[in-house]
Amino acid sequence: MATESVIRDTDFAAETANLFKNQALLQAGASVMSQSLQAPGLLTQLLRG
Image 1: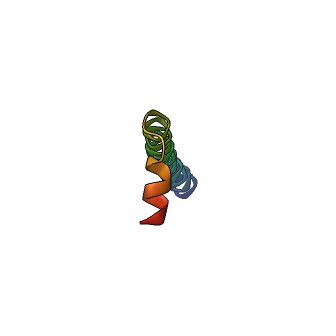
Image 2 (image 1 turned 60 degrees about the vertical axis):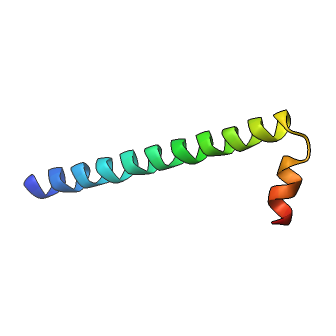
C-alpha cells in the first residue's frame, strides 16, 4: 500500500534525524569531558557560571 510506504518512510526519516541528533550530543559531551580532563577545574568553572 502507498499509505504504509509513506508511514515507513516518515518513521525512517524521523529515526535517522534522532540518530544524528544523538550522535552530535554524544560528541559534544565527549568533547567537554576531554577538555575538562585536560584543564583541571574547567568543568567546575563552567558549572559555576
